[in-house]
Length: 379
Ligand SMILES: Nc1nc2c(ncn2[C@@H]2O[C@H](COP(=O)(O)OP(=O)(O)O)[C@@H](O)[C@H]2O)c(=O)[nH]1
Ligand SMILES: [Mg+2]
Image (tube, rainbow, N blue to C red):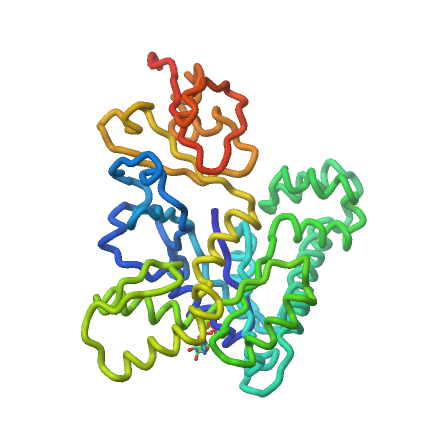
């Protein structure tokens, strides 16, 4: 899963990226496949099953802080967009390549109204304009790419083949085809964008008083969109203070505890965050944006596979070692394949560890399930 961060210049994309990926490497000692320069690892935060089952977990592909499991997802800081980008303004191929690969987009919007559509300082800019023009640019870009690729193509089967070649997923094509045919290019492209690149809005710089007022207005205006108040800068400050041992703070928490003597400036900065972000909004919002992107926008679920249903462990005794993020609708057999292709092939049945009930290959997994898979071992 890859999540792209988009927005106009100076909206706070890089700050958001830093906030979401800044995590003490000491607590995340597991290896990752190659990460490109503008990519980073963010984490969704879920309740770790260790608490409920009252066991001490030994995570392998994630980590646990005080009963909160942090599960990695890849984040990509896409270049800034400006109005007219789809006609080539301020946008290179790099942007498009990054965008194509993203499963979902976080649109970081400066809600303070203190930057114009190009990212220049101003007063009283209406942030809802950004929500509209940016979505429109991406739609236009989709229309453009599809038109260009389907020029002179008249055969639907061929057209769909070409779209698959562009990295567009079968399941997305299928859904769009229920509403439009591929030659209704504009409607088709817009629907495809909506399904294949859903957008969540991070209402950033919410610590600034004008942003609060704008948020109240705009969230009422766009009821169908997911808009999360957030302060990327506050989250960076809290994660840094926590790394330095000045405060106790877990990303996503609604408060922090001071654990060391502070300079007057540090004291003031933390007080500001508490009064203007944490108390009025319940958190900095950065963690919440990541969580809602994965669980609400993309509809994923988190599932713990274990081998030993009594010890909740793998064969080496690691307790609740893994947690996987799977698309909604994933079955017990899908989970088995995710654990290992051999386990998938040899799948016999599975056990829902909570109920101790046997479940079949087609059982649709639920968020938070702890599942033990029984497979033929002779492969
Ligand atoms: N007050 C406030 N300023 C922020 C916040 N996030 C980012 N900024 C500031 O906005 C400016 C642009 O941020 P940056 O991350 O470089 O924007 P980008 O161009 O979208 O990558 C910088 O001066 C940041 O310090 C926030 O949550 N609150
Ligand atoms: Mg930047």
